[in-house]
Image 1 (cartoon, chains in turn yellow, purple):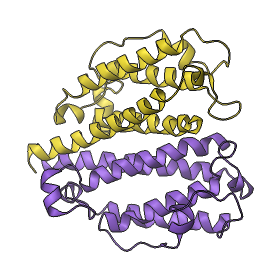
Image 2 (cartoon, chains in turn cyan, purple):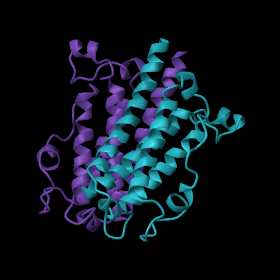
Image 3 (cartoon, helix red, strand yellow):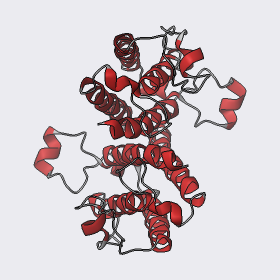
Image 4 (cartoon, chains in turn yellow, green):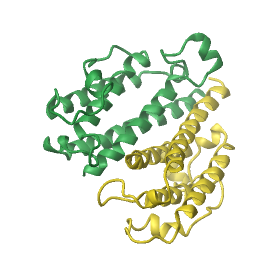
Length: 161
Length: 161
């Protein structure tokens, strides 16, 4: 098959990523700052936590995929290493909206520069030796997995609308 | 790039699909038949509805991707064309579990036979003419979209665990 076939395949994966981000954007656009304090189900994560959580996970993709330095390492303690405290958070809804938009815009722009060869090359959390045994641990598998992760939480966010 | 590169790309998409189905399987295995009557959030869809809904959507992929005849057209009225009635359903939890497993097993087996060329060929809901203008409307984009759809509802089902 031609180079254009591999390009069409990786472009489809990137389109799918952008589509899910766009749907979450829509949910957040139609949410008020007060809605950020709502729980997706009784006693479960608040909207604010899921936005911070997704931003932290996406921010870590810069290093994992070798496309740059992360922007907001300060998110991890509150949104990744600990569950939702259900107490006042350290970020306002406006701050979370801005971080969410910034991380995804810069990350997606960086991902759009990758060639099909780079998508099929190993991500940074796997050694050369392990990659020989597990050649599916490439950048594209990370993108597909993070797209599913974002969809998973989009389904929960949707319950607040 | 070589044919093996395109094969690795489509294999990654199929792995991602199977991974999401496996996670839903895990949730359903750990759910009792009584859990099938639970709502994912107050007043929202019941587990039984989401299982029937996902089975119906996946069942329609046989024809959409041109890989066979659908198995359970009787699902559409209850699980696709109408919202959850929150009344007694026409299928028992055991029947829904069996349909879910059957549809996904047969569909995935059929999808595993497709070549990279076939993945990049148009799906059956697009005309030859439209495909020339919109070459991204191929089988792979359907698979990625349905994988995201399953993840979306997996996130909701997860709230009942």
